[in-house]
Length: 134
Image 1 (cartoon, rainbow, N blue to C red):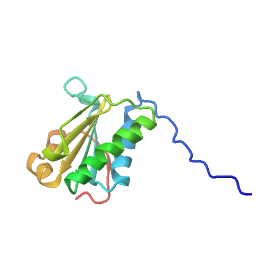
Image 2 (cartoon, rainbow, N blue to C red):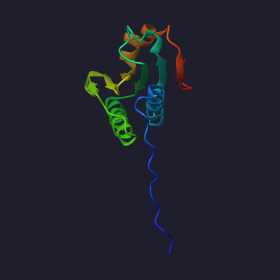
Image 3 (cartoon, rainbow, N blue to C red):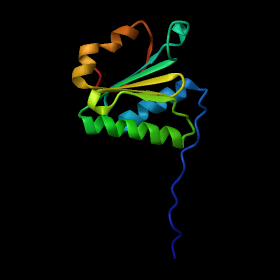
Image 4 (cartoon, rainbow, N blue to C red):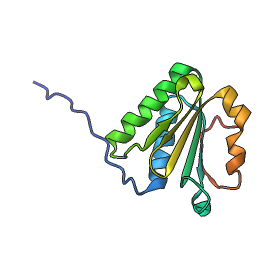
């Protein structure tokens, strides 16, 4: 008789390694079909910045935005990274998820184009850009 398959648990992330956490957030978003995922490194502007890293991505609908938020919360919790707060709702078309040093901005396409938040951080290095970014 074959032994039952067991799920392999993802290793815990060091929540103090903000770059690893930011990259993990980008991976979760990309894996769940977020579009135009980017990670900005804002550590050099730490005195004036709210976070070490900003992750920005686009959801295709309210349900997709809600699912991205839920996947981030679940997968980061499973990796041992505490959630500080969530601001916004899928109905507002912009949700910010804060993981202590990492702010993940989940946008509807129209709001992302309207607010152009990438322009706020254009002087910061981009450490990850999904292949579908223009």
